[in-house]
Length: 89
Image 1 (tube, rainbow, N blue to C red):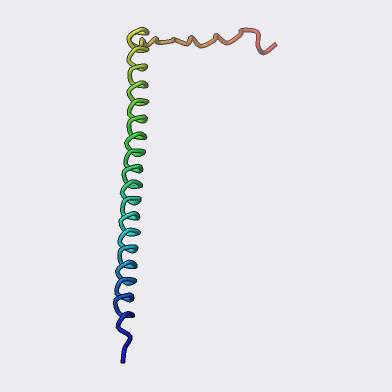
Image 2: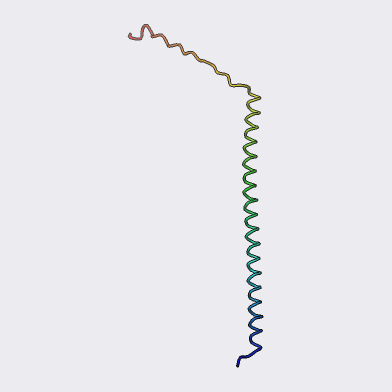
């Protein structure tokens, strides 16, 4: 003959274990979601910083070009040296 009080205690223990496992899984899901959100936020921050740096460089180049003006080219003519008349003496 089985002990009747043992069965409800076993069921109660099993239910508590199941609840504990669900709570742990829920906590793990929350942590994973927070980690994914954090990594997306960090990636977004890196992209914004890089875009800001690119914009600053572009604005700096534009300002430099506006202040300096268009590039002017100069041609340089090199006149060959005349041979010395008394180089052989």
